[in-house]
Structures are given as C-alpha cells and as structure tokens.
Length: 160
Image 1 (cartoon, rainbow, N blue to C red):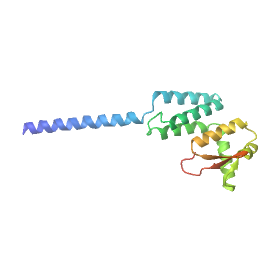
Image 2: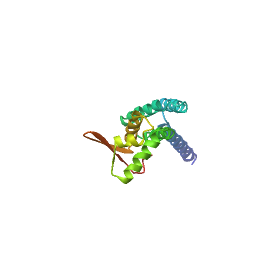
Image 3: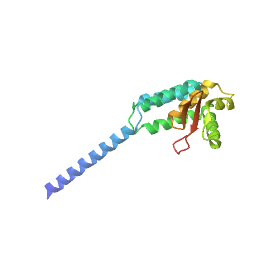
C-alpha cells in the first residue's frame, strides 16, 4: 500500500513538472525576440522625434521580413499589430488610407494620380510609400495599367 502511494505521488510530481515545462515553452514561443523589441522601441523613438518617413521605411522592411518567414508564424499577427500601431501615429498614412477608402466607396478603384491630387499637401513619395505599406498590410490592392496605377481598397476586418 505504501509503495502504491509513493508511486502515485511520484507520478503526480512528474505530471506537475511536465505541465509547468509545457507552459513555459508555450510562453517562450509567444514572447517576441529581443531584436524585434529593440527594433520596435527604436521605431517608436524615431516616431516621437518626427522621423516619420524613416519609420515608414523600417515598417515596410519589417513587413517584408515577416512575409519571408523570419519569425515563427504564431508571432506574425502580434508583430503586424505592433507595426500597424506605429503607423496610426503617422500624419500621412491614416490620411492616405482614409482618402483611398472614401474614394473607393464611390468608385471601384481610384487612380494613383487622382489620389496624389486630392492629397496635394503631402509629398508624392510619402503617398507612394504609404500605398506600398497599405498593400503590405493587405489594406489595398494595386493594379498597374498602362499610364497609371489603380488602387482599390480592401474592406475587410483585418484592415487597419
């Protein structure tokens, strides 16, 4: 009887150790790598200093890295959400996205030229950079036509 009791207690202890190890491994998989945390902190600092164009370029490079599979697939949504939260503070990106959505609510798609004319307070390179970013996040689709590029909004729940 004593042997059965000690054996049962030993099995219980091994189960507790196995469950704790499994939880720690799952938590480690969800945690972002230190390099990504450092990069996000640098981007946030640059954003606060007003270097919006540099931050947009870094976000674009990070999105391309995510698409190439540089991080585990389970961390991609979390990183994309953190990168998108940086773009909300940008003065150009939300304006470009809002203009595309309002233009696409009236038409199926809008030309890049008419978009640049309606957003004339911003530089064309900033508008194009925001278009590439929105395409990387799946918020717009770009279609190249002879003479002009057409942009169509993606109205779905994953869009920012």
